[in-house]
Image 1: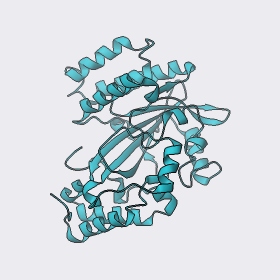
Image 2: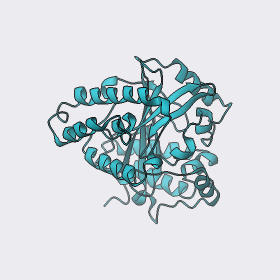
Image 3: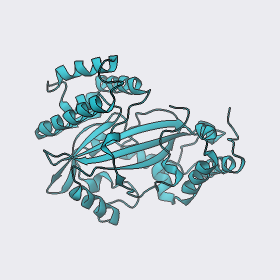
Length: 312
């Protein structure tokens, strides 16, 4: 967590439940911050505890995985000279390099253990683009076991308005088809959760139960107990394999940090507006039905007064 949010897509620059793509400057493809070692330590712990829960790959993806590893390695070396090489992070990276390609250290997993992002490899087949390999330690309420090998239509099935045959589903498939190696893209989205946990898997059965019961509550003072979860996603076509690499970087901050932001009133007002505009199925999907009104009230109070009513 940080004193101020790194990304604020709730400021109106992104709209929930839209595709919202923009061109990506490859110089900013991966992000490294002061939480680098903590993220990697948690990834290593998750892999050690149950690798199958966080890593899956089709056997014929090894060449594409190696392509990803090379891109990640080169970006770290070229993009972060103050960190790589010459620091203990880089020493850990070198140790990982020696094991890449071994049975217990496939290239995509090795690449993922060098960065804070999760890495997902999408491949074109007869049924469209499918999830062919992934190192996914920090899912936002979905399950790798359920999505592995599935086409995009099925992966996005639970998202309101994004199911098979929908206009967004058609646009996403077309975007994947037309993506070029020299024209990567990025998008942002956000959700709210009741703690600072990065690892948030959820099966479809758990999601259905949550939507039916609407139990998610943020305590007596929701803005004090809500955490903003931002996903920064990038997509780039791999020049050799033709697969698409989908990266997911998670940022989690307490909602209270908005009170210390120089544009806190504007951010809070926009955030409240986006929450108020969500339809019932969208609120259920994000687990916000129970405390929707109280979260809006707290944000609106912050936007009016310029202070967070529960700021410590």
